[in-house]
Length: 284
Ligand SMILES: Cc1ncc(COP(=O)(O)O)c(C=O)c1O
Image (cartoon, rainbow, N blue to C red; front, side, top):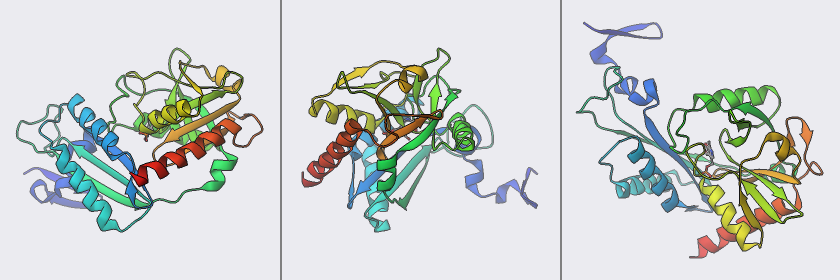
């Protein structure tokens, strides 16, 4: 008889809770999304569902009805009663005994978690400290996969240095993105925002796309190019972009103060443009 031991409890494998056999647990074999709501409305739901569908396709989890996912996400969000929420959901390939090769007969598992989300206006003013870390991730960072060990390790090291985000640096010495955010620089003279072009080495961040949209609307040019940490430190302003926090100024980079050490003027303008976009979306 196959047996299992959970902490100190021995039991036959047949009595093991199914969730212990999830391929997501052993291999990170699944994909996820994080959506947020503002004032009771889920923001950019279509964009997140489209990226989720793509991630599923890229890792060959087939046969998922994305409209069914939409309904489940909406229903969990409504059930929570939260106005400002973070909605996390994932699909794993399914449960089976630990084998690299997936079984033919397994069915995907779906999980949604809705939690309350507080905004932090003070951080938007003061900004955050970030520190660089080698990008140890795999070569398909465009897939929002559950495999986040390299991101977690980078965040742990950043935390040790008093930084709240790790900025990942590729083998060629250029910044890819944050461990859990897109990364932007601002050139005030050129009236431009700079960010790495999309590719397999970064996630196609939904907030990044929104920032590009509002920057262009605000008359800024958008330059998609890779930057080294030294080039980033030389820029007038830096910020990160991510669903749960939208735009957050970076006021310290590897211990070096950026600009005045407070949110820069263009970053501030973009934060306000983002708010305007939210008002526009909530009216439509
Ligand atoms: C590695 C990485 N890059 C960028 C982002 C930002 O993506 P989004 O704007 O879609 O939240 C995230 C968000 O979790 C991320 O994990």
